[in-house]
Image 1 (cartoon, rainbow, N blue to C red):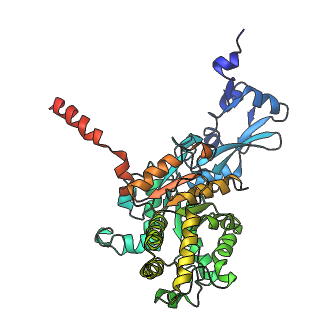
Image 2: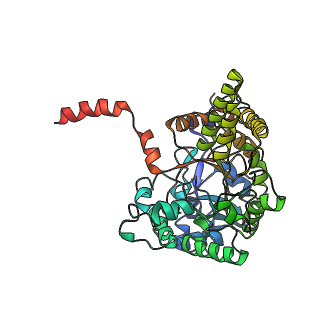
Image 3: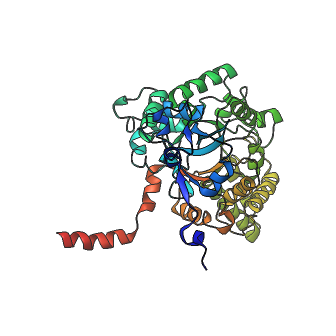
Length: 437
């Protein structure tokens, strides 16, 4: 004897068929346009049997209607960037739409669990991979230096301000892509910050806007001028109110209903505290940190091998250039102690792999044990080929199999482009095109 479920799977039926057969009626508040967008959703026989005596109608939630009315999508379609969920109402089975960038149109999952993001504000660059990304990340440097004030990018000065740029980006990528926009000045008065965010939301809608809030460390509104002129203390010394400024700002925005991208995270120890602000995105900045770690390791090795105290000075100078020490720090032995700690910490990953991605692994482990199922990790600051291929391997490691669609890789489209090709392309295309000729 065989089990039919093992051969053909459990039987399903569409909502449209259930209405057509008379087993369900369309709820009074669900217009034909709305019903047409849910009639193809399937429900299994066992699921329907569990609720059959409880429901008489099928319809959509008010949130469902709001999403449809916000985005211009054709009849019969639910927009990309939303998953369709059932909600039990009063004798009604309603369909809701919940923001989820891992979904394409009609709630179909994107092809891979790893999601891609373009790290640019240049619409001409975004256009090259607009249908392949789930997220777009920007910051003041990207928007102003990289595009608006760059005549080679903003050709003819056709875009005048960042809101014009955001408007164009929104048109390009459509509703399925989140757009992270960083605050111009995180130290501005609160009323100015709320006005700035409200203007962002006006352009992008609450569904696509993600407010980018940076970690600020010991920088505050009073000392930011000194910092920019080159005078600052150690990155890990200062009043706690300054270190938690970004956390509290992110938390307030989240409490107001905004999704937050809590950015400028490089060290694994930042993750758990950052999650207390309940951000939508956290980050792992990897390349610069890895280069610095390797540089320190070489200098520490030279000091150990030779005993030459000149290497102490080199370590001290290297750390000052890398912002690991305050601008006036002159303590060579203190720098040496910190250097050893940082290298040991950064190479102390549980996997035993020293590829510079320990912050990624640690953040995924913390996320796995968190109570924030919708929070995702953005891996950024990729520069070398090696870092991408190592990351590409990391996301297939068995330990992270259950972290589905919670990893986003972001970089400039030009960086991603190189990984679409291989020498074999030349080899075979030469043969193919010669044959055609």
